Image (cartoon, rainbow, N blue to C red; front, top):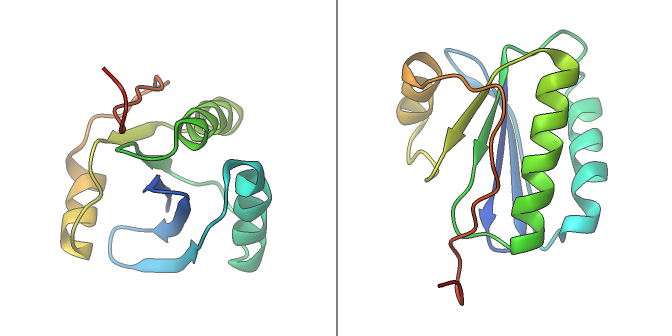
Amino acid sequence: MYLYINCSIGYDLQLQLVDRRSVVGRRIKNGQRSEKFLNSLLDFLKTNQVRHKLSGLILVIDQGSYSQVRQAVALVNALAYAWAVPIIKLRKAPLTKADLFKVITGSPRLKMVKAVYSGLGVG
């Protein structure tokens, strides 16, 4: 099972639990700014009773809030290190469940990701 974090939807946050066949849990926090990110993640994991080890983390970094992207990258790197799981980094969110399942089977695994911001007003 993978923890999917999409922080590239403006100030919203999308969290999902995904295995190779289904999306187990899904929650979109509307308007959750970066200061509520960690609490939202902990609530999500507790609500979905995640007690076993995850297979990895999937992080979508596109045009999100600068602070939220940096915080998500730091948190994902810390979780990956603490839980000894790989990270899959995506530049765009998968459009369908089938695309998401392809990501799980065909994407390279990383030990760490870097915060790269490409939103409005940069460059």
